[in-house]
Amino acid sequence: MDDYSVLSDTELAAVLRQYNIPHGPVVGSTRKLYEKKIFEYETQRRRLSPPSSSASCLSYRFSDLDSASVDSDMYDLPKKEDALLYQSKGGDTVARSATAAPPPQGCNDDYYEESYLTTRTYGEPESVGTSRAFRQPSASLSDADTFHHQVCDDNLFSSEEEGKDRERPVYGRDSAYQSIAHYRPVSNVSRSSLGLSYYPTSSSTSAVSSSSSPPPSWLARRAIRPEKQAPGAGLGQDRQVPLWAQMLLFLVFAAFLLFVYYSMQAEDSNPFRAEP
Amino acid sequence: MTTSPKHTDFTAEPMGEKPAGSLAGIGEVLGKKLEERGFDKACVVLGQFLVLKKDEDLFRERLKDTCGANAKQSRDCFGCLREWCDVFL
Image (cartoon, rainbow over all chains, first blue to last red; front, side, top):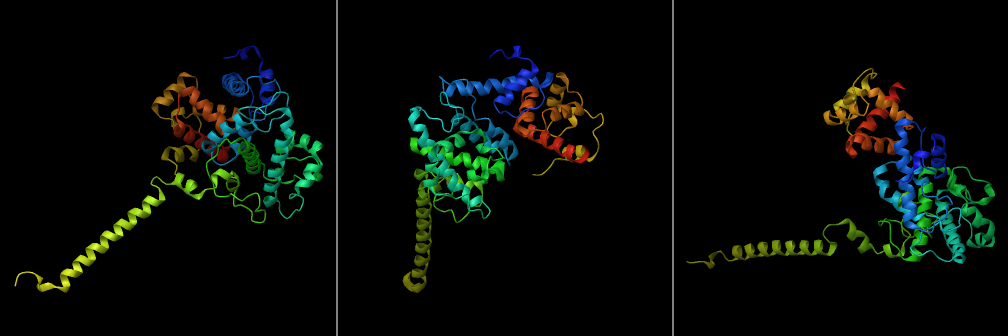
């Protein structure tokens, strides 16, 4: 374990704040816990992007959001996945997507635009009648440079948005669920382009186009992944026995019952078939 | 989520000087371990809970590190303390 004990309490708290780890006061009883948390965080970061710079990473904002959400157990896995996902690419202040093979710097723009487009489309269902949320893609692309900075900006996912004309009001509305939801599309898009599969299937698949029908919950917005759209594959994950096998079993059982029924009928129709 | 009798008893009145073993989810074994670490009274555990800003993840992890509580035990303890705080704090 790294030697965090040289840091004073206030320094430790500063590090926690820098990593966006939610924390309380650093006192004697909590110190070890926070040291452990920092160690875990840095191990994760180091494990995923070895040449990572000292630039701050985004990942731990999830814990802040996740603790506010319903079930922490449910989020443990996604939280770690997201933490693994959002690592800084060398030199970027805030990372948008983690990749097994980090793309060249020139490709970052594409990712940001993609993520921005995706998040915007998701933003629309949540906006309560504001037309600002649903922007044409061209608008985003035209404003490429500033938007990249905006998207890169950590404040994208915070509750307060800078400037309503930035057309991201939805992110601020319900920070816990929405921010997670917006993380999902970002990560999904980036990962779909990389061919990684992460999240389990969920219902919503046409989220990109169905802006008019708001999904019931943020869960519905999780899957935009085209490869997860196959209903057979999706349903197959929910059932222990595959669907076709169940139907087959049912048909066999029905056939058996019919056989028994008709065989009994045959006996009735010819009661005197037996010995005289 | 159904609450155990221990939970109901604990949240029914101010904890006073109740031992840590009277918390929901904390049985004999865990109670002993907590005592060894200095958390002999429920109010001390409460203190730890409050210092961690009532954060579920942090508190449950702290419990796990301190006395080896499993997920259910830490969840019960957290729920018990949180409810107590809602009522009395």
